[in-house]
Image (cartoon, rainbow, N blue to C red; front, side, top):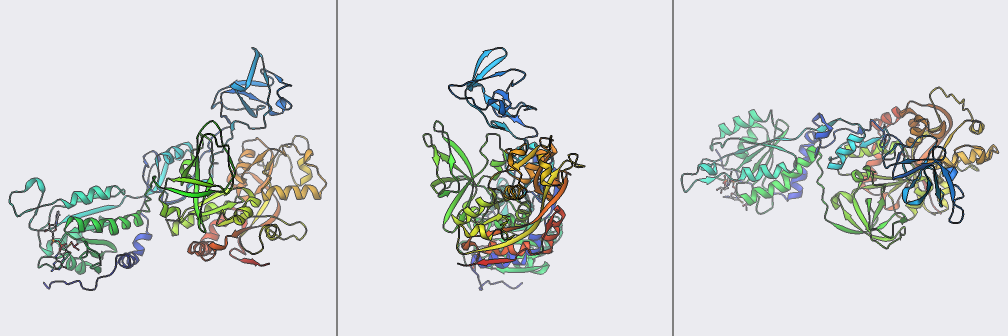
Length: 638
Ligand SMILES: Nc1nc2c(c(=O)[nH]1)N[C@H]1C(S)=C(S)[C@@H](COP(=O)(O)OP(=O)(O)OC[C@H]3O[C@@H](n4cnc5c(N)ncnc54)[C@H](O)[C@@H]3O)O[C@H]1N2
Ligand code: MOO
């Protein structure tokens, strides 16, 4: 056999690029298996995971104290206490207990004065749902718990249990076969001669790769016989996802790795410009990778770290979490904190222009979703009452900075297509996460103007022109680019069969109709107020006008749970709960784009996704979406 010289060595990055490109189809094909969610630690979701239950599943008390009817507490203050009667105005409850009609709020036991067995007195009024964990606060049934390619952590597993997801599709663990070769190589425990070499690499390789969730089998040691080596590769490649040969990668008279691989398949690269590690052989047999690792342990280890590890991460979409880096960033929100305690604020993080931006996640002690979403923690020290928006903060990262640099921040109005987009983005680049925050359309404009987000969703109707969004944005920005995501149907979300016969805005004022509203910064709220104004209806005439929810899905859930009869929202949210829907408007939902993001590769990816037929088909399945202008861009200059 001819000796093999490997003179045309390439740089490492180029090598990995060429090799991984040849393995494109191998990486694209996911091997999926279904497992018990409770056994899912460290596994990677293979498809989006949808919640089967609301978390929490009922309105529950967040404190020990009394359940009250908030209205009956109004007017209470230091000099004018209000007396409440047990059974009529309040009931004693503990943390976690359900809050049932007619009660809608909780007062902590510390804040009440007990008069006698049947009466208490309070000196502070409470608003509705104070210290109540509302049903679906963490996640609503039908919402996405995780997109595909999410590596499950310990808290994620508990979150899945709460959302009643008991079986999950995950990426099958990679099966790797390691074949030690060499006449002089023997098991360390069986050494008899001085010139024999203990076979120590395989343990190093196996123990290292198991960190990344791989299952590694060690073959018996093969002699330097090309036919024996070839036969084993040909047989085992049917069963394994990757074969590693050790050693025989260089130019010795018995170095058969190159020939064995090339005879059975194809060697893509032999020789890399690194030291140690240069003689590595990177090949493909049966469309699967077969790699010749150099024999010396350090050389072998370098190829493991720089080629085999990224290969496993690419194939299985496994994400490595780190939690030790501290970076400086700015807060995207004004945050009030307790002066007497140090607060651990969980945040999503992204890099917008030159700044790292920290977006506060849900703060409640019960909001497990915030652990799943956290990129880092900002500690707000004792004695600090307020962190201003834009103020510098130190962020203690919980995920690797390299991945956080890829995060796309979308702040603004809530829309279900953003979940779909998050999953598609993962599908095409597992290293990109979408971090979204729901602050309403107006909040979205501000987040772009202040440099806190890459994209912002909005749907703001200008009643004077009938145009969407542009006139509102102009109040804050002179030059900007706006892109259409979709048109969507807005309307009255009502109980199945529309028992209260809601057809128009006038019907909201009818006796016995309980309305549920959206928060003031929401485009949907503006749509309501615009219509009320046009029809001369005063908000006071609408029962429940001051009850607010922060998303379409949470609003629909309240109607499903019979906590309200009607609310304004999108058709897709009504569909999730099989509620009825009375269309009111077809509105334009756009994404405002941060300047520095326009020429970003990630923006190109988003464009490619949303204009694809695959995305459109999935979007239309949700109901109420029309994607005729999706991807269209409006450019506004002063
Ligand atoms: N004429 C040339 N000779 C060599 C070159 C070269 O460019 N021209 N490259 C050198 C470099 S660099 C390296 S690295 C080694 C790699 O050699 P191989 O991958 O072919 O490995 P072997 O020759 O079969 O073994 C070398 C050495 O590795 C240790 N070894 C092998 N298997 C194991 C194992 N399972 N456990 C522990 N240790 C192992 C052992 O010490 C072997 O002697 O080639 C240079 N030669
Ligand atoms: O390149 Mo070798 O891997 O120096 O020992």
